[in-house]
Length: 309
Length: 309
Image (cartoon, rainbow over all chains, first blue to last red; front, side, top):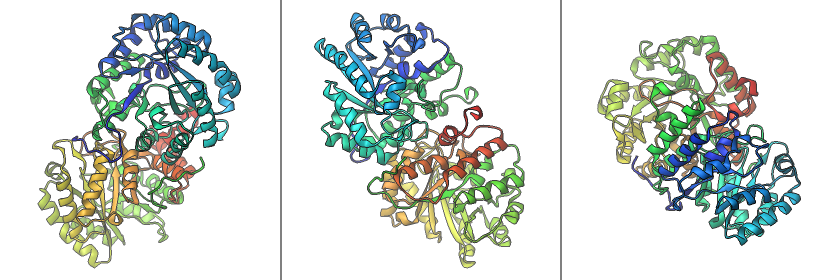
């Protein structure tokens, strides 16, 4: 399709690829480190410049990512591609520093229930846990992203008030984080809510230049919400190659926004991403073959031979 | 979720439900008329006020809809719910009039290739065929909708210039049609293109009060495109319960916008539709059971018990 811009959208969007971490962490069968390494390398070759690669969480909680050191050890570090790693606590930061990681992400929760279930802490306790992580990371010159999960709704608490999200977001940013990713972990949000949330964050001093959005397609809303976020000024969008993933501790939190469906829209809008869609689709088809099931991405399905569907 | 409006959207959207016709016409196994009747009746009971029920096409071309008269004969006609029927030609109009139908739709093409493949005619010849259909229908007091299909792209011709769509659309409306449904039959469109197309139609005298949009989710763009259309002033949106359907004569034209995913978004935006989402999801789950495969609607999947997935 010839691109047709929409007024008010950014010229360029940075896609923050989460497939290797957020996508794979849910897989029950352990994916061999060689497959992960090829996956990340092919994603980079497809033009994705930021790839959240793994997590330094304790292997007991996410066995799938127990090979974090091994994976990072075999990835080519060109210096061009950024490989942020999720770091849950100070022990995780120790591992990140020992492995020469320069960009980390911490995973906060907007709700008490999810903080307890995912982090085994109250929101206050989780922020207290993050404070020394961010302090030390910043002192070591690391770039730090903060996720605020359950930002639109929570499976146990229902609606999550915008003020509550803004409060947790502000406290995370006050720790010294450089970027905030607003996570609609269970995919219930709609474009008006997303817009209101971004405006409320801006009013609280967290401007769109410091924001990313992280949508799940559980209710089919991810791309429409992304469009609303772009119109509100956001320029960093999280997505997962092939739509891999979800969240292991939140029921029905399946289906990240597929990177391919996002790239299709941005290509059509004439918004630059630097991503080669053909290479990306080929990568997700290959990965679907390794995982033994079709990709939920509509674009991957549409561009695959009928016999594969 | 508590609704959060987005400025510039309409207060109310009319959903034009196409599942029984556009959704079922593709099914290879004949769906019994009792099942179709229950499907339509349950959709009406869920609050859908306009349901394109069947087509008076020759049974040789669409065997699935050969039971049009029988189906219409058993549907309760309350006068509240509108049951438009697709009418391909004068013979189809005869059948519509003989069955007391008061609203019809004709199916035009923006491209020569699809006109030849779907209608076995050039675009000019198809318009010549439609002219007496619309004339007689109007003389009999019928409401007439015109589809313009392949409005964003065509599998054989590629990009479809906006001027070409506007030209065919204008000629269809000049015949005397009351409503134009812009059909992205193969689902390749993106929000900028959709917006530009709606603006070009308005500039040509076809205002948004006479427009509907008809998106397919082949590339995952349907809901984002719908959002763009709503922001451009459109208030009638075609959708298919459970995401049933596609187009039998256009490869990869699968996946209508699921009505449930649309209703989820509109509910979240505080836009009225009159639809009871719970009843609608239950209907689509029941229909998926009759068809023997899961619904592609994300909302239907998310709201169904895990054991059904």
